Image 1 (cartoon, one colour):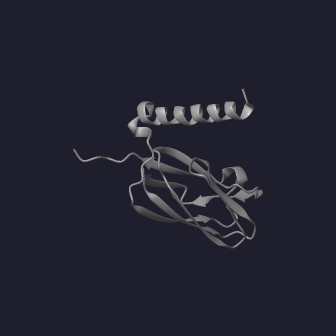
Image 2: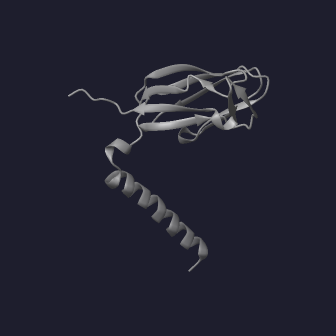
Image 3: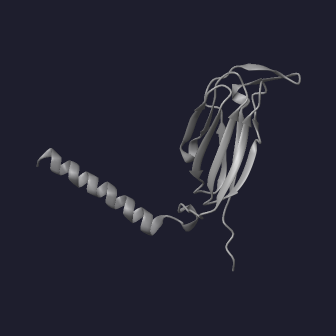
Length: 144
């Protein structure tokens, strides 16, 4: 049989398997949700502290997040949220805006995605690896 026919059959099986999984096996709490609510946050990459402020953000599953991220440092930072496909560079002394929808419940880290050095803050050594925050996504509470 022609190799292209085999590729077409394989493609149909993969797509069909995905449809069967989504329809019959995917649990309701795992299905992506969009609530239509918009939450706006401002996150600062604080000058010479290797930290984000605030470090913790709480939202509900399905919320659209509009995040204004301000880099107060004279060197580049980045912000990445792997679970929601966010990865953005923040040039020195700049402000960026990112938008995404939190479709799943859970705790998701956001972190600096650009190596940015290290220093001492209040007698403690801090570095690029300390620039981590958390987005806590609560499941939607349904009225009974």
